[in-house]
Amino acid sequence: MSGVQVEDCAEGGQNVGHIDAGDWMSYDINVEAAGEYLVEYRVASLNGGGVIRFEQDAGQTLLGSVNVPYTGGWQNWQTISHTVYLEAGQQEFGIGVPAGGYNINWINFSRADGNTGGWKLVWSDEFNYTGLPDPNKWGYDVGAGGWGNNEWQNYTANRLENARVENGNLIIEARKDWYEGVEFSSARLVSRNKGDWLYGRVEARAKLPGGLGSWAAIWMLPTDWAYGDWPNSGEIDIMEHVGYEPHMIYGTVHTEAYNHMLGTQKMVGVEGGDWETAFHTYAIEWYTDRIDFLVDGRIYHTFTKHGGTAEWPFDQRFHLIMNIAVGGDWGAAGGYDPNVWPQRMEVDYVRVYQR
Image (cartoon, rainbow, N blue to C red):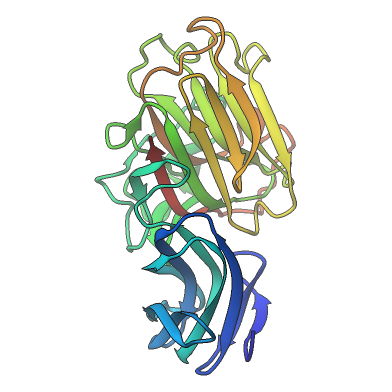
């Protein structure tokens, strides 16, 4: 690494900053299999006009390049990408800078054909646009009334204050604004009838809200309710996070036999320190005989098929939901702070793979 510096990043942790023409960085990477790869860069630039070169042989071999656009500021982040062909094995790659004026937060490699461990990309939203969430991919659950958990918010539709895409991220925002006569407003995005899947890998890269009274979730419900009302047809909570436990996230399964009304839900937590200040990848891998829960690629919870539909209703289509609730039986269990609002969940992408 030469000529660059690190600085605190608005997305959590630190980013590489002050990148100017002539600077460079090098990385040792183990490429598992030869093929086409997508190289993604999380960048920010006040001026635009920068260029990233992906190189080998100390800059003698150019594998690919991409232009860095104006993103709106040094901490307004956007994901850009290009594809390269890579040979298998341990290799040294370089990032060359023929034209600078940008920051880099992270670099990510994935198979360009959408295959990761045999998974093929079938649905995604990269949030590389601005405005309301894509109506071809997302709908809304709307209204107040507690949502079965004595929650306090009113979920809205097509309201930028509560759900919008900006700077390469989906923003779901819970606000204390007395909208439509309810003290709190928020959004609950659903892929129902726009993205519904039976088995597969479902993942989202997100930074979570905090504050006493917040309750964020990335989760799934059945589309067809083949076995009856909740909880009989099942629920898969890919990630839940409540503000009074800032160091914890949870993955949970609910069924007729296992649910929070009985106190038998199948829940496992992961302790960490930066769920609210850094992005992490939350995922499930859903098979015919089990559901694995993962954070940042590590399996921390497995629910295995057994019994009948009371234990395993997970042979039907499910859809994705992302929301921030306020208060409620769990969200307010550790108290409520009236001074922490608004709170945001920022989502970099959502991707669904199947085999």
